[in-house]
Image (cartoon, helix red, strand yellow):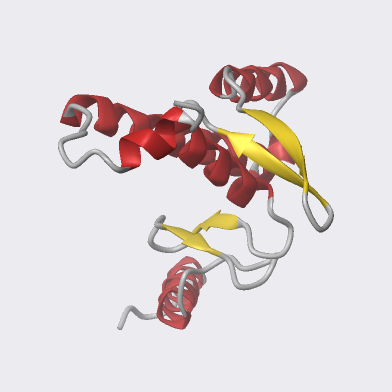
Length: 149
């Protein structure tokens, strides 16, 4: 009984959440990811009121926080106590969102979420980067009066 609830539930074979609840959690995480990406991509083109709205949306996401304690082992070690599996996943998602080395990104071409191999990665694959550049080039040709292929 001293173990966190998420750990206890992980050993229950019959434990499951309703599909609608799980789907809503993924929609909430997608909203958070999209909000963060749009905020920084459009930062220069939006006014301060819009920036404030983005900030309020992000603040509403992080309502509950896990507790922790310090164990004195070979060195002081932090042990997180997640009261639910959802909270554990939400915290991992948050860490991935703010990671400087390998951040979560939204591909400029296909709009899929990917884990960036570099901090400035903009595409999920070389194929998407190539397709994006081809479409961009074709758009410039059309705007310049060039022939369509």
